[in-house]
Image (cartoon, rainbow, N blue to C red; front, top):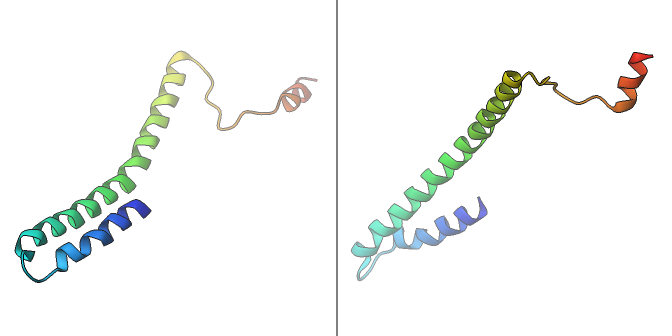
Length: 84
């Protein structure tokens, strides 16, 4: 997020600039700002979703092989104490 904000704030003078040649630079600044905002939003929303899908896929594969899917592994001492 810091890199995106640095690049976005660097493009603000291009987007808001006035003077000679600004009509050529202003669309570049606006495009940079819009692209950075869009890419940052997509990254923040899609990355967690992909990790959740990969976790579900991993659990589905474990169930398909017959492996036990447990939320957390029990310590070895707890398992030994239950069998006594």
